[in-house]
Every structure is written in C-alpha cells, then in structure tokens.
Image (cartoon, rainbow, N blue to C red; front, side):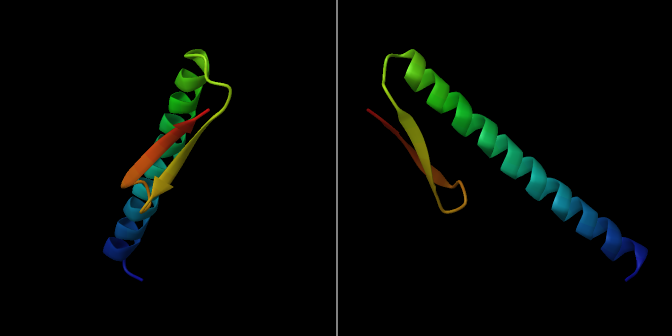
Length: 58
C-alpha cells in the first residue's frame, strides 16, 4: 500500500464516520422535537442509508 492509497483510505473512513454520527444526531434531534411537541413516542426510520427517512410519532 502506498502513501496515496493510505491517505485515500483514511479520508473515506473519516467521511463515513462523520456521516454516521451526523445522521444519528439528526435522528435524535427529530425524535426529541416530536416528544417536546406532545407526542408520546417518536421514531425515525431511514431508508437507503439515510437518503430518505420518515418520522413516525404517536
């Protein structure tokens, strides 16, 4: 493995981790907003690796 491919691998992993943690924060925030609005329970369902999602609140 040369230096350029190592840098590429580190960059890809870094971007994936940022995406995963950012998506989780957004999901938790949406669920908290629904609870604060008076719903009993809220859950965000993601489709296609976060491409699309739905907030279901009851």
